[in-house]
Image (cartoon, helix red, strand yellow):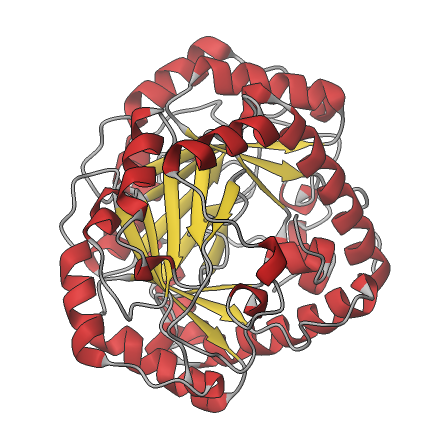
Length: 224
Length: 224
């Protein structure tokens, strides 16, 4: 939903999921423990300004699962007061009231290939909280697709919430590989295959199919 | 603005511009004369259904410059009655009343590298017609960037219409080349350079920077 937007990322540590193909597992598997700092909202804001100066007006909250943290409400308030527009990405397994104040909410329920189970009742209640927000506050659904079962899952999500903007994203087949050219070419091939599947399906007329643009440009490099 | 959307293209012939790098010059330079047919709205709709069956619900009007044609109002009405959502792309040199009925309007004023001159008074009046449409009707500005002068032009556009959603798109450096892998790798390199310029600019915080996704996947192939 925010593809191409210049943004600063704030990643929270910890996740209630353990997706088999997680590309940010350093946020929850202990491997990034040395990079995790406990920070207050004001400290995060200062750090963003130190790194980005006046060259940003948009911040993305991601994780891990940022929706585990009620404490983020103070950061959301501070960023809003500071004129920053926000996006958040979360799997739709937990609700926090501060999600209502984030302009662009992406809910990304995890398909079967992740190894996770969707709690549909919880997801229903989260979607219900996000519809009918004031103009300027939007949300969308995003499902990452690795295989046919994932595509069937995406159809189920789209059928359950037909009025929600829906994005399909081709999965990153190798979160370790550092050869960017090979990686990009492989991703584009899989992207084309996913496009073809969607083109062929009358159930998926009103969806958007996208690659992870950053992996096309930077591969699996972190910090970009 | 509609990146990744499954859509059917309706291209109109004829353009009031002659952009030096036009990737659809067959619509106006005579080279595609044999592919151009004069069709009524009902015939276009039948042809779309013949090709796409029930596997689409979105149509993009492009050109050439579709805004040269007041006659498109009958197609726009027919598609709307048929439950089709529409997008249009036009350079903002002409207004037609049917543009008000198109859900997603992209205005793409042409930067200096095109060799064209922007009529700012006309552009002002077109943008004025597009703001404050009902919810569900959106518009955005898109500028294709080939060089520094184009980026300066994009800043001028963004400064003139600061509240409009703004997209920068990296230019297609070679509209003839058919080696898709080389083309994709070249485009991604130039995309990364454009990202870096935008990252460095405090004037371009609230813009989105995108590649032409279809050229990454299909190169310069037509009909995809």
